[in-house]
Length: 468
Ligand SMILES: *Cc1c(COP(=O)(O)O)cnc(C)c1O
Picture 1 (cartoon, rainbow, N blue to C red):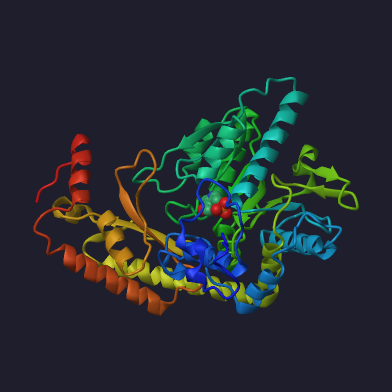
Picture 2 (picture 1 turned 135 degrees about the vertical axis):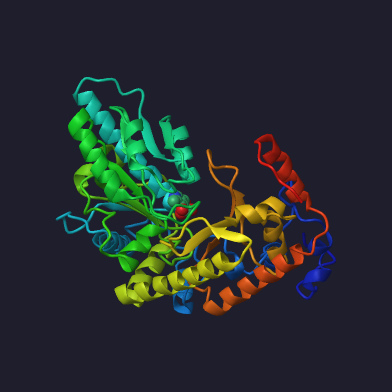
């Protein structure tokens, strides 16, 4: 608040507003100057770590200055106002075309079929809803009940699929990961399918592990199942990370529209699409796979505008950022950036694998991220856990998350590093040094840490034996 004591020459931090607690429950009666409001909000938004040291997130923390400028200049543009900014909608269509092409679409229409979203979450929802509506239409045509739809995927799903299934009341059937089978087992997935399965959702760039489900093997298994059972089940690929990695790193691998059953694919523009948040994309193999019920037309923006999406108004800046990146990097540039991230990820993976206390979860690094665990023999006598390591690294500014794996292998605790543009080999070396130093310090411990004691208590209940 600006009181009679304050005027335009009052120092920001000597103002009444700054001397009082920030508003929590009620809007303040009086306003204040832009400078004071700015400082107050700004002072609350300091980062706990430097964004580029946050190796937990998949989301872009580096863009060119020109891209940042372009996006900042577009901050007031509402994407939905297509009549006011018609070129933004065209740009969005071009991005959809480019992605559809990168994913080998067979669609012949000039404008390929897709939609933008706030992230993969919205894109996954749209892909899921389309699969559900197509299934329902088929069931109706056949005069069969449509009250028990289900969806099949691995237990290492991202939380959006739980949201989708809960909100649309679709049964989520999961194939658990096992110590032997670290990605979706196609045969096990088929066993969960029946006439009510709206689609199977393999993941390229599994959030939990960084691995890719084998979409080609799943496609084959579902075709065999179709012949045997008559149930024709499509695939939606959740390629939140992989959608921008595979086309550049492994263009010959078949995971996309080259496969018969892949009818839709979603990705995050703000992950390896290299755009600041929030941006997601979903592409359908052809217009015929996007149910008509999902397109809505409105006439109150100055023309008839047709839109597919859960949201209406949304920022346009990210579309500009995505299109900028396509022009700026080109195929070669994207390939170089993703390869650089892969290289740093493989380097960290190898170095961590060499440390006697750790074991990598997989020998493969398929996306620029990987997980590791404590080596089982070392774990028997260790006085610390990966949670302690997470805390220790945080003291040097790193955010490297430790977490327990999904159901069935939930007793396994792992640590994950997501390498993104902006994480150089030099930074990797700093991280590795900090990890080695932390471990050396833990090895001097005389007594187990609290987190280790907690773990032992839990594990004891599962019959695992520890000694010190
Ligand atoms: C990140 C992620 C999502 C959700 O994406 P947002 O862009 O954060 O909404 C969905 N699926 C997978 C596999 C992911 O990694």
